[in-house]
View 1 (tube, rainbow over the protein chains, first blue to last red):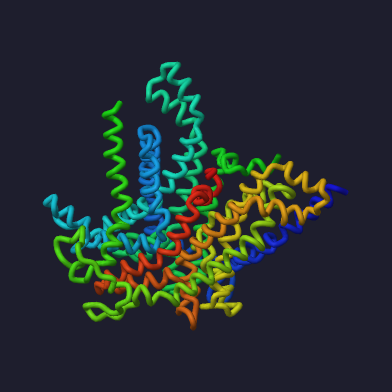
View 2 (view 1 turned 120 degrees about the vertical axis):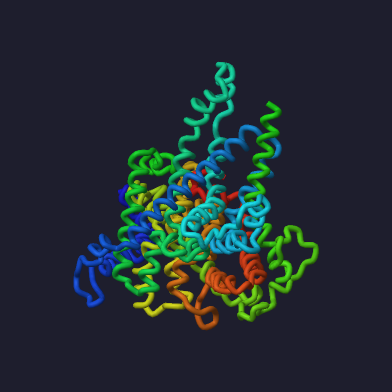
Length: 292
Length: 284
């Protein structure tokens, strides 16, 4: 009796999200599959998926997405981790000043970040090229160069997201019990040993969560590409989300765009699945506590 | 040891300059005259300032541009859409759902689903949401955007609030139950009030993400208030074309001007920001 009543209360409270789930997840998902498996005449077809195999731009976009993903995550992770580690271990009273400064990019909207980097990377009047010229080197057309446009995007993305990795790793470092370090110094561990056997295992949760959330953030990316390069020059900065947007809303091939969205969903789903399966990320995010 | 500290301070100062400089440069560009902007070498520390970039339309090469102050119609759209989507998703959907998940249903699978939904990129549902919004005739309206924005604000707020509800000691609710309160009264009168910091965090972070959202706004709206519902990011992207025609002062001014609401909110909510941004993984 009591159990039933509790279940009923839970269900009533969860009713809005169940309705939400039907309207904002199931229904769009059905619509997505419906348009991906039909053509403009409304007939069922697999053509949208078979067309992917011969789509040269899709191949380029996927390669770019991989480059963008690994480049951004590597940059953001190493900078975020490095800065957090140095700040926590070597500074005392100055910590909060640096932390506040590194926090700044998190408050700027992605579109504004794009506009900022347009100003910074300008070849003729931008400050970065000015400094390059001071060093006696020729000016660089960052966003107009086939092989430099993507690295420029990665730098702007790194500026945007490395503070995010910093934030999570730094919070993780703060939570390591001080006694562990004291014990390590009593045992005579070297700095490197302390890092390897005390710090790293203690902040494992933060490291994995930072990696997961940072990766998802990078994969979601659209704004910077749209503002900074608009996919160009050529197809050199087409990433999956941008290509899908172009197909759907510049060429108005919504059926093919829907098929691309399914591909995107599979990529994200596979990534999240691997993370949940092979790391304890659920535990770290507090999901397991629901079982108790 | 001391030497190492000095090296680290120098290194971190350089890193900090890298984080500050883009913001500083934008700020400085916004208060330069076009003559000051287009000189070589660039002026790093201007001694004379102008505010004309904020309200003067047009520019030296004659391309008509919006002004920062002229962004008000887009700001109205953004504010209304963000406020309604945020309030509706937090109070009507997320708060009861999070409470139910933590205290009653306790389904790991539902938790996983909500977590996954916070991670789905906008690009995945871009096509279906466009088709649906066209079908129900809400293209270029506040309501169309609000509905679509609820799709990402609701799971985020739910996830965030789950962490906060979970932190409430069970004894508080048990005491209320002994006092004869019904489960709904406990939720509404006791638990909901104990997670007010979480609610503030959810409201502010969702407001900021609605305010900054680009992709859905791009496909679902095509004109600003009063005729349509174009939001601030679209106002800003309209400057990209102008950038090529050198309205940089206006561009920088618009960026600074439209950033103010989210910066003010961000500073106000700084202590909740860490926990919210990291989806509750970091206790702030």
